Length: 301
Picture (cartoon, rainbow, N blue to C red):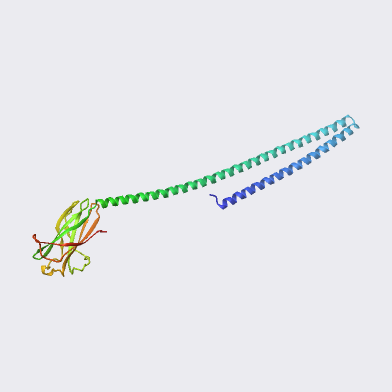
């Protein structure tokens, strides 16, 4: 692209060239006119001198006539020199005209080259703009492809990861209080490792739903295979001192807990669970079946 300073310099250069050309042409024309008039004056004087010398020569003797003829020949030689100078001037003028034509054609070629350079610059700008647009489109396509890869990766992880929850809870009475046997199920396609689980006992009325305790102590459990179950006692920190007499229809026993585990992608997840019962009477196996009423899955950041 050309700036305004470049255009001003080009215009000034053209004005200077045109001015110098005009001055040279005026000087050449004036000099030719001067020589032409001077040559004509000499030619007229020579013709007059020849006529006078011829008339005068008839009145003189032979020697005087020869001297007159010699002077006339010298004047003719001077006239020939002047004519040669005039022709040399015409040749110089022709050279100047040729030089002027060369300058004009060179200027025209320069302007053509300038237009070609400008067109090339504009084409380069268009090429750069097209390349930038293509790069932007490629960047957008790459972002879409990366997003598709992320979605596919996330989908694959969700399809392959472990999903652990508490399927069943039974209460067993011991001398120092109840213990809770829990059946953990992994419904995912891969094993769950580094399991930790814990629970806490909360008493409340049948119409009350207490919130999940904030801090629950946990104990370690072995891994659970893909699509498998595992039965374990869940660690319950406040089980000691709980008696059968404290459980009634008006005072239900609730067991709130959490289980944490990792999948094969080293992502940690957590599942909340809650079970309750309003009776302490065991079945034939000495167990009290509890009723589940809460489950929540979430990733642990």
